Structure formats: structure tokens, C-alpha cells
Length: 304
Image (cartoon, rainbow, N blue to C red; front, side):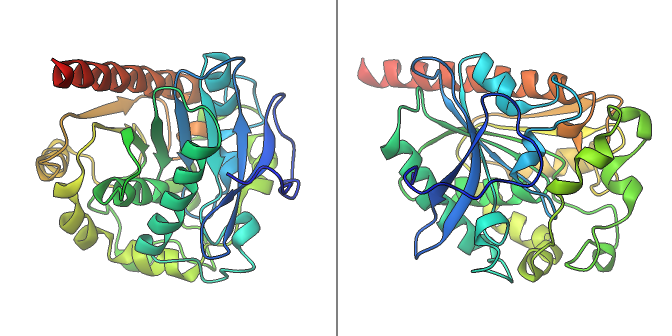
């Protein structure tokens, strides 16, 4: 982790205790990020990965104190680092087209290795990802290359689209408003005004990779060997999440020791900016605790 070089101040406000840092993505790529840390040694370290057309501030919503994952996680004893994916934030000028998923995974693994070597991480690293970030989290877990992960918690990402691929968001448009947000009542007042600084152009490679995601998922799913939790909002419109689709999705994660699927009522696709954010974040952190316990049990069993 590169904490000696200050990251450029992000547009918009940050919650108390949240600050901007930079991470080393390798090959000269610097990734901007936000971090919130607890007092003392963290229980574990959550690395949060945003979706397409958003930035790391998605996990530090400013419309209500209960929305920010970073402040909640730090308050409960975790270090939380929200990373701007390659092609966003600090790296956008260097990578105007972004990177392929495999390229992003390499950059993310380098950043994760730097986190492991740069500060106390507690029980280990846990990826919490939204939408396109879920694709990256699964890709990282399929080929960890020496970066151990406790588990994955992914919202708003499936394996079969509920829309025609030609209707997916690209660098010129962020998709249909109701598919991204759902109902107005799902969000605190001023959410859309306060979220304007979080919106970023979607790199062209993001869109190109999104189109082929169903095939890519089928190729990598069996290589994911950590616990996985998936959450679909009640008003999720981008992904198929009917019982048959969920059964097919989970059946492909054959090497994951545990796969769970949760539903979140009264929520749209952008869960972490809505009133349901606190519920989702608490459930995700509870799943992290279960992953920590499982890892501890596995180490204990292996040592006897």
C-alpha cells in the first residue's frame, strides 16, 4: 500500500474518519481508494469494490449517517478500504479504456498484496463487491495467485442478464434509471444530488467484458474456492434472480465451501446508497464473521 503519496481529494464529502489513500496496482498503475480504520488491531480487513459507472465513494454515501459502509465497518472493528477499480479515479487518465477483467484482477491482486504487507489486516482480507465489482471479485477468487481471501460478499451481480446485452450500460450511458435505482422511496433525501460526484464514465473495456460475462462466469465459477454470499435486491432489474436462475448459478460454484443467497426487501440495484444499506452491510459483516470462524476452525483442524 502506498500511503506516502497522497491521493487526490475526491469530489464531494467524506464521512468523519474516512480518508483518501493510494494503492499500488503494479506496472506503474496507482489506484485511488478510501479507507476507514478502527482503533487498535482490526478484526479483519474489508476491501470494497464498486460497480460500473460508479466510484469508491459508493461505499461512503453522504445522504444519511447509516448509509456508509466505511464508517460502520470501522466502528465495528474492521478496516474498510474502498478501491477505485482500474480505469476509474486516479488511474482513469493512465487507463482511459480501463482494463479487461483479467487485467483488473492482476492489478487488484497487486493492491491486495500491498495491503497485506503494509498494515495489520486482522484475520485477513474479505472482498465486498457490488455489480460489476462482483465480476472482479469472482475473477480474483478464481485465481488468487498467493493472495488468500476469507470470502466474498456480492450484491447486484448474477450470471444471466435480465436484459438484452445490447441494452447494457456503456461509456456513453449508464443504463435505464429505474434499473439502477428502483423506487425513489428506497433512498434518503438528496441521495441523487449527493451521489453525483460518485458517477464516472464507464471505460469501454468494462462494457466489452460485461457483454461476455455469462460465458466468462461459466469458465471461472468452478475455480472459486472460498465462501460466497450473494444478495439480490427486491427490485433488481439487471439480473435474473428467479428460483431457477439462482439454482443454476449456485450449482456452478462447485468448489466454494459455502454459497448463500439473500434477498433484500424494499431495495433497488444500488443497495449501498439506500435505506437498506445498513441492513445489507450488517448482514455482510456477519457473513465475514462466519468466514473468520470457519477459517479458524480449518486451521485448528489442520494443526491436530
